[in-house]
Length: 126
Image (cartoon, one colour):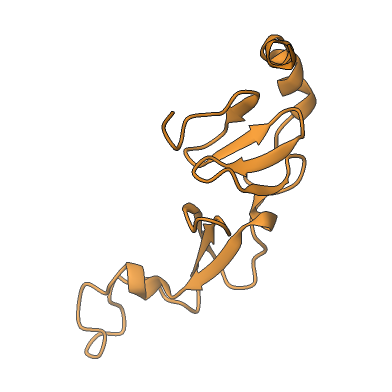
């Protein structure tokens, strides 16, 4: 089994994120760390790092000579990275204006997912 293959009873949501339908919990697909309740924002259970966007997107021209250099202005844009607290796998990156709350980008209908995957859950129970 590869380290990112969905485990039995779980549904892969992203490359490194899966949901356990029995326990209704988010899990890291790399290390199986329990991230939090699947009905909540998975980002609440991750480590968060804010980076200066100029570290990632270096200015294209000399910023000492020119006011505008094609690099993101940290006064207008922040780079937020989300990591698994157990294995430090980078799970998500967001570009947000300062002061903007973290986004809730994945909201699952857990009940509908359980219904859709009921046959797999029954097989696993036996």
